Image (cartoon, rainbow, N blue to C red):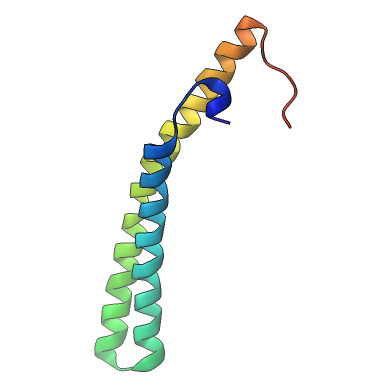
Amino acid sequence: MLRAVGERPRRLLARWWTAWLVVFVVDTAGQRLVDEQPTVESLVLAARLDLVAGLALAVPLVPWLVLVRRVASGTGRLAAAGLAGPVR
């Protein structure tokens, strides 16, 4: 979609995917701690990792918003130029 509107998405997509993978790894680590050692300390650590993972979700939000804004403005330019066709 971004290429259709003249954008090069590689860096933004790389940042977005990297952030999502970090969130996934941190969240999974917290879950495995509870599965392996259900002690009070492991539950506290898992809760902290869940909090970090939740806060880290703000990181992929930024490149996602940038991508959405670029696509929206690019399709708006194409529509204004009369070049927009049906979405496939």
